[in-house]
Image 1 (cartoon, protein in one colour):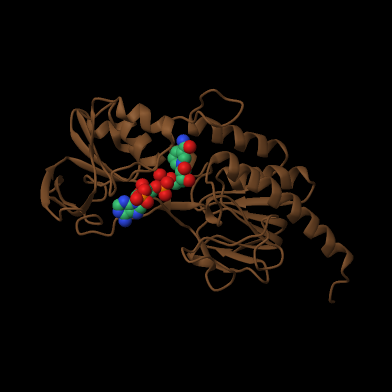
Image 2 (image 1 turned 60 degrees about the horizontal axis):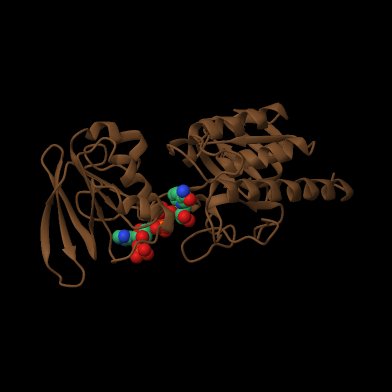
Length: 312
Ligand code: NAP
């Protein structure tokens, strides 16, 4: 097994991790980013962003490629496809299936993943009518009927994207008011292919070899109904990719990692950035800003270690 030593090891190569990598490498410490898959994180699957400053509109994949190219320029070392087998945050040791990494500081940028509905049929029909990525799978639903669940920015934006392919999109929300930003809501209300199903939750996903219907329930009247659809896209929020750290640092009730304003976690020399941490806003720009802050303080932390006499 290969063994590496770095001043800073960043876990996760989305916008927070890439930005941290850029700042750490530019701050003249030796820095590496390791990722479970390839780099780019969640935004790589976003069709388009129109709220990243400096770009009127840019594809998520294109933006993340720019992040990566810029970090490369400053000499970040990248290790894709690294499944973490064990991690010791206090002693800054990370073991993956292929290598072990010893660090002086760690920046956790592992992001978050879609929250599951947790209803019968959901697990069984993943890839056969249940999808968590409209951009990846929308084309399979040309002239078909699909449902999106949720009322946040993701649900509404993805519902609009799906209307490019599907003949009809039900947007099923548990309340009668959306959570999404007003500008996004207004666009969705004008879209004739979207039918809003208010005050409703999905109780079961049904089908044969593929999804063909949903059992839905109106939460006000408790009336049940069967909605014929070919696909369902749950967008009901996110859960942090932080399970592997639990018990080693402070997390909030939902498992997000708690940091101070310098992105420092409860473990000295360990920082957390982006969607994985407790934060009031989860955007590419806030993730990138977190990464910059954490890297600056990780570099400072590594410098302080040089002044401490090492045990022989
Ligand atoms: P979100 O804003 O947390 O919205 C989740 C939605 O799902 C809410 O409407 C919620 O209902 C509903 N929900 C939660 N649990 C549910 C359940 N068990 N059953 C049914 N419905 C449920 O999540 P998100 O839309 O994934 O966005 C996550 C973050 O990314 C947010 O900060 C968002 O602003 C950001 N984002 C931004 C953009 C953009 O700016 N362009 C795009 C995508 C995402 P309630 O409303 O009743 O709570």
